Length: 223
Ligand SMILES: C[S@@+](CC[C@H](N)C(=O)[O-])C[C@H]1O[C@@H](n2cnc3c(N)ncnc32)[C@H](O)[C@@H]1O
Image 1 (cartoon, protein in one colour):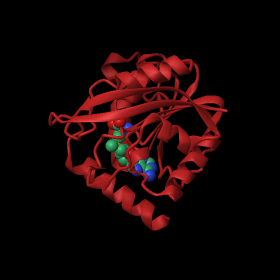
Image 2: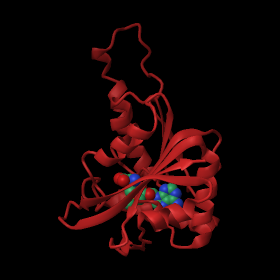
Image 3: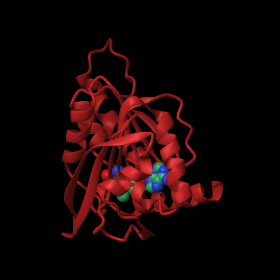
Image 4: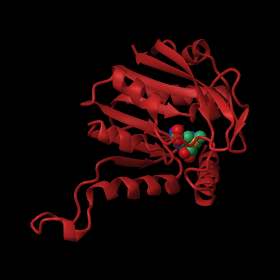
């Protein structure tokens, strides 16, 4: 397990260390579907975690939308360093623009967790768990069971998992790694009985290179 998590960290650190964030196939300028699904299912006063967030602008978008309890988790320290710098730049204006009596550093607007979701031990619960294009890398049933067990502990009863994976007719690999593909019923089956399917939809993601990648999105409610 340790070995696997080290190699996952190395793999993804290499990706984020060698490619610009707007070059990767999963890049999107606006996380429109994610924001709509999170916002429609869970109140902005709630706690949200973006699992395998990478350098996604979702955290910025959630903060703009009024969410104040946002956690960002990724196995890649490199990816989270990019996000942390970007997000902290929002609040730490240059000293010249700041009244003198304000402290030079304000509390960070989001929480950052560098961890492999398969071995992470959540220390609190969340109202919404978001995952875009991470779960589909779990191609073994043991990994999937581990993920679902952690999500079950981290999401409060009545909370939601908002999950986007490659669709049944989506790609068979991404970033050099094999991927599993799902329709909504297939995804829901993995999360039953602890979660029940509340909503599903299809999205066709356009990569920066111009390829179309069909995604299955589900909202699963923790029972
Ligand atoms: C395809 S990218 C998607 C990034 C982001 N969710 C988005 O939509 O832009 C997959 C992300 O999951 C992260 N990741 C992969 N396996 C992981 C794991 N086992 N635990 C935590 N993060 C993981 C990678 O570092 C990467 O940032």
